[in-house]
Image (tube, rainbow, N blue to C red; front, side, top):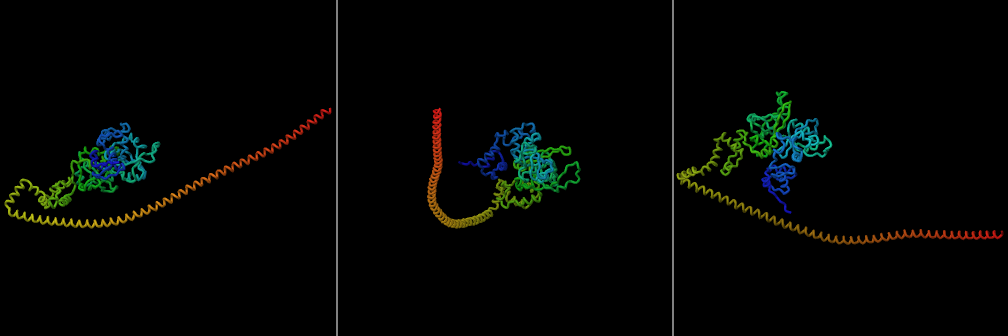
Length: 560
């Protein structure tokens, strides 16, 4: 049966999804593929992707898919709450299909086992649906929570604040009992922290002030990334690291104020975000409206005040799918000068700038470099090797060249002759080196061929020896088969003899049993004969007595 193969990049275009999204989804289904657009997948793997992402397809859950799930048809924060929607096939499969939540911890004194409260459910790797308090027990029986059976204190309680949202993957438990209210149906996946992660916060700050001071304050600890909202723009991600220990809070904070943790802004670890190293000190600028599907808001009360935190659901997916409106370079002048001067080409054909090989970040660096150090020797060399040749191709440049040649005809001709001689010498030397290289290569191939032939001869001898050995073993097996057949025939004959003996034994036993019965019958007949004789004697005696009595009676009667 012919197996159909599909090229991955064609499937990605057909289903309108990214490479990372396809690889991640198949991995969750237990299928591993190469993360390359040119990779090939089987028909089965294609069917899995098509079932999940095919446009305009009506899925079995009743949710209409058109590229991405239409959020207007699904309850979400600031939209129609789930409590007003009938709990049916439409909602529950969406909530429990992706098995990933945004949750908050439930306060407990336990150190090992604890619980988290589901707040939102992912229905793909970045979009979410809100789970209201009314229906949470319908989706997460019993108790409306997810149990964390291992390391709750170290993985959850020590890491996340009571009101802080975090991402957690979950799975079904093995001990769920629907008759018990305290029996949870779901638990966190795995035993480590790989299935639990922080969400980057969105903080209202002045971006220029944060860049200038290099620090930012957040209401929660242990964060690695943050986004800044400044007017109607969102900037980020900014990589951050804790500038103080947990105990080093601001000492002048009043009891009524919130605790703040200070972080230091640093370069991004671009590899973890799917970015090139050039983006280490780059801040992306986005329109807030472009990130609406990546933003989740958490509302809560703290000291009787209504609070709101905003988070980004998936940084890596956002950076891959959403185009920024601007890029801001946050590098020092010294670093920019060092990078740009090191990148100037030595030869014209090495110029990346004229070939359009520079990315957006290097273009920003060049713009800033020209303002900082426009008169450097490196810049003049670059103009001579790259800009001047382009100028000489213009009409004005050609006119200048013609005028120069007319004024310096003899010198130009002699220079051209010398140039052609040098080019010929260089070409001849290069051709000779290539010929010698080809000869050396052929000699090496000849040696390899001789070695290969010798190896083949040895291999042939070995194969012939093995073949003869197998032939001998075959003859031996044939002889053994004949002996085995003879033995089997003898066994069959012996079995037949044994059956005959057993038959005689059976007959003998039957005869003996019949003989015993005959002897018994004979003895009974003899005994009956004896009884008959005895009875006959008794009858004779009785007859004699009767006769005697009869005579006496007659004589008595006669005597009268």
